[in-house]
Image (cartoon, rainbow, N blue to C red):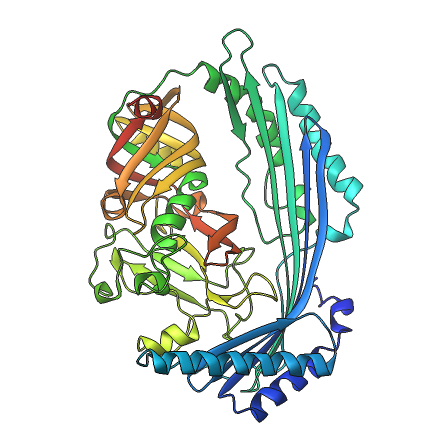
Length: 507
């Protein structure tokens, strides 16, 4: 049964505060104004060897007013939930816009802020797809389940330590603007994680194995049976870790690569997700994590990868971490193509960038991580589509004579144009004559973005598709954090450079 908006949020003076702020902005001559009130509750639990080591439960409540005045942005925020205070915040936003416009004129002008058209969405409500709000579950129960799972892992031979963590977020958002859009939203997300560590007392060698369960836009039911087979994964980890400890070091060279979704999602995030943010491609975003090789002049012509490559931006995927009903520009969530048949055909947009670059409409990628931050163009759920008639992971492996199968994400490195990269993983298996031939260690795969995606020779079927992702995508200065999902099937890449990380470190 779908959830309703939390009544304690609805009891706040949402409409009255918005009316006061927007009326003041109009009276001061704003061409556009929007009001956003948010309540974001976040909780984290951490355990070390089945014992609690850290706990936090915080709530961020406040509101922001953003205006366009004289062709410039203005922004201000507040926490005093009174009508007078909301009007003052609107006045501050207009004053800042006036100052920005004056500075732009004195510097010789510049592009005026104009927003792409968007239909009015009046009195809309949206709630994400979940069953049990994790905050309805007592902390003792949440911590107790992590402790139980940790203790089970610790009892297994070869497991020396276990780290466990659970992050949970409940986010409410009310938005209203001078065009007449009014939306109220609620979403829940979870990130559970356990890591088993093995230490060889004789040699001092150590390694770890982390659960592959991705963070999700689900509720507590994710840990109790819906969406992931925790029992199977926890039972398998000790044996997989023991095998990893005994595994030989990889021999560097060129191999065919079968990449599991538990690893490939991160490659998508870094080499496609960030690269197709249009503010990066235009050079507006550079200070935090660079720009993009996929520049705007290459739209429609850049050969991003093989003809098998079809990538979507999506704000509507069920249980996606970046899934919403409406963004922080008041734009309804959508799904669209970023790469079609290997060619770059789209970008991620907000309303201002969409207008500036000639798009008729934004695709809903404006987001601020708190009421005190200005909305940015942020990443949608960026996903590689499966082949409707594609093979299973086992069949992809079966077609490889000499290769490596990659499972789980770990460390990575990518340059400031999202082009040259290197990725490691949780575990790697040799493939010999179509069969897995045991784990190897110290593996990293290295390529350029276009070479890597151009080498994709087979895409797995829908049965291999998994929605992975991260809670902690960073962008901008001051920095903001956003959660985002990336779905993908297993995929086969031919002739990829494999490094031995211990040899590279010794150079």
